[in-house]
Image (cartoon, rainbow, N blue to C red; front, side, top):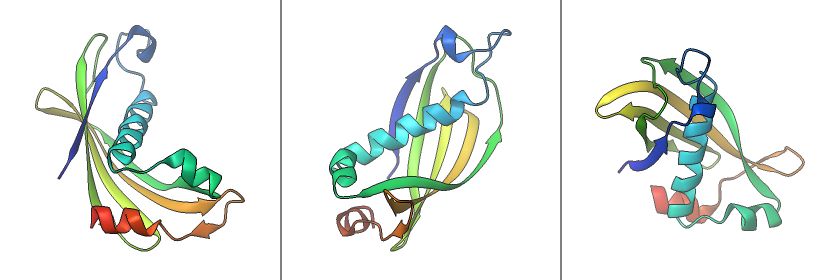
Length: 128
């Protein structure tokens, strides 16, 4: 099941041509992943207090179209694969039904010192 997250394009998101600056798509999908995690019942602040954080290990993306100032977008997020140490998600940024941006994001769990750690069991159970 995919998660849908709305994004409104503001002036600050655009370049001089009025088109969304390419790096801002990464911010949009990050917000959507954070919202997805919250809706899964994950408390990332509590995880941090326990010494664990999520880290993006790999990101592959394609820019397929251009969003513009005042566009209303949707970020769709879906879990592709989950293992004991890795969570791979697909994300698309859409304007209406048009896919403007597509990414595959690999996230891992790490200690605050940057050492790899297993994904929390409740997360693996919940999204499997």
